[in-house]
Length: 412
Image (cartoon, rainbow, N blue to C red; front, side):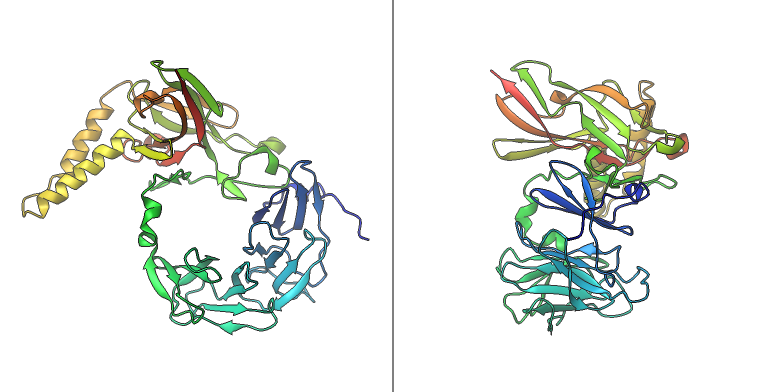
């Protein structure tokens, strides 16, 4: 019996490549190996891997609640003598592993409840056609089902419309979902934003994070074994480093109250070993909430209030388009510039700083952004977007980000 070993001091700070969260435990992979932790005890153990099993791989998709773990090596990792790349499997939380299928070019891997194992080779290279295969004997033999598939394939997932089949998510200039009606896999491609359009009928509670300004960093905060349980890593092994959240998970108000919540924007950064805090700047206003938006759900219905500045720019764009298709001169640039200049002439707009040691805090009257007229519970998410007003040349961070969902209760 191999005794469990804790990670070494150096391994605690290695950036994680991927996280596999399960009901009561979590496994992570990095260049240092594979580590396991009980989610309640939050103590880590390093798994002893077979000598031929490379580190730095990725986890495959398996059915929820399955004891099966899939792990595949990636082509850009360097191999040492004797190592065998491919798909490995474990059914005992990573204590033992078996090489299911050898190969040095595996991409996404997925196992369905019916036992069908799917894998992609050449998944994210443009110089050769990606191959999609299925195995009915856990990797011993494979059938090529690539057919008319195309593009860079970066995800496999169970088909919600045809149990026992797989869907392929690919990119070829734009995103596509590839779907088939039966096991012949005569793929039909649908642009990703048009696939299952009912998904878009509901306002999503997604954690947006983006920027389009030059010299404007899209900071990321990476998970390590040391910090994994200290933060909410929304992408599994990483999270936006600009972190917005309400200062609580639940807020109660009486009907007729001013609905105001305390919020904080901080920079997620590991300051151990004498690192200097990164200081960034945002633009904000004490009463004009033009950079703030809100998503809320009440009685199963979701609503969205876009930040006013974004909504105004989009409205100008739409009006300009409607004018141009009539053959009349456009006015988008002039009206947009006038809008932004008018806002910047208000001296109450201010530049605020935030960092890991000095976060930015304020009270935000979300009652001005959303409808909280009826008593009951609301699920709420904040949005911030400074894309059209902030200026990187003035040191202001330009972009958007969102908060986790929190609860607002209106009592009678």
